[in-house]
Image 1: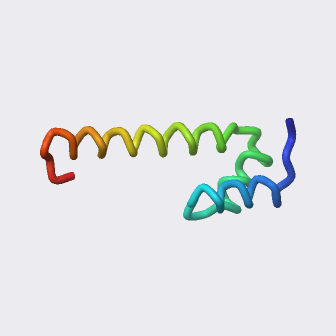
Image 2: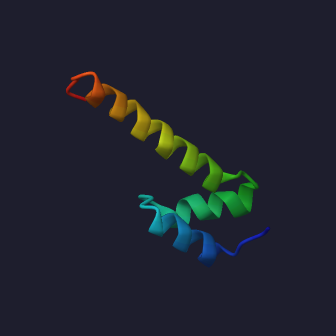
Length: 59
């Protein structure tokens, strides 16, 4: 499913991306699945920090 730049930008913005237009533009121009990449990286980052907190770390 192809989304427009405005649609993708709005999704990235709602998800808290620092540069929603940049992520969306890259997905459209470069045909890179940046939304999937962003979601994966955000979940991985959250899990890394959650594990550190669970172990009593100060991360």
